Length: 366
Image (cartoon, rainbow, N blue to C red; front, side, top):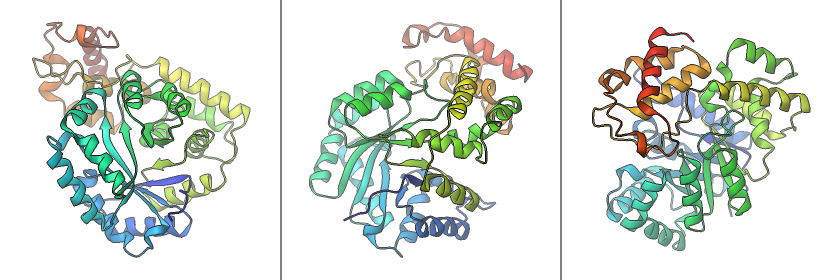
């Protein structure tokens, strides 16, 4: 019988890398060993992580440990599935790559309403349910990055064992958000949280806001406060962190071994900073992609994603690289044909906001 998961889960998507872009196996193995030796039991990977290198590496590492000593989660890349045979082939390949006979947690990766309906119509969900009955999947769930409306539809569609959402003190109104967490809790569906530190972005908030949080942080870092914020949610059995250094592993384990409730002052600081930052967002795009494809090749969700990141965190290396790489898919290719406007569930005036994206990102300052 597998052990109950430790609250911190190890996300195998941000391992340290070599100069060639491959997983730095010695460093990554050192991080995993430390996690194993200090009680971490939940390890989350996916078919496509690290250019498909994550699953084989993790499977090789876990061979040194008793199968009952850890919980293993991986994901079906629904965007690569066009038939039940595709799903079956990928599932069998994942068992082989991870060198196991079953998965404790198996997710349909990055679902939204449209792709969920496709998986149902193809018979993929029925196939996965059969794998549950066969014991090769212990718990079946889905990961999610779309709108709350899509989340509600998927959550109500069947009896899921769990779901996985992006959730932190800044993103309470983004994607599934707080409403999604509460809906899942109401239905008795455990919520595994990913991006509790927003991929590290919460450590890069503007200096005056960082100072405001640090004034009440006592001896904790912003990362530790962010993890403790999520830990206060009782319907969260696992908080995933995609850690890239041994120092991050050490700190996160220390924080979640015995997470202390936030003080009233800490709650207030995070609420004030979060509210201020959310008000800086350019618009409420959820990247649902209902507006896509654009007839003129504009990457509409990508443009708004860069814009909102820029407005939250300012000009940084990530923003600059994404903006420079857009090329002909950027806002300047918009012709204001207006075809996208009636398709947006958020009623965003897309062509006009694209013009604002170009103006602000080109100037490089707000």
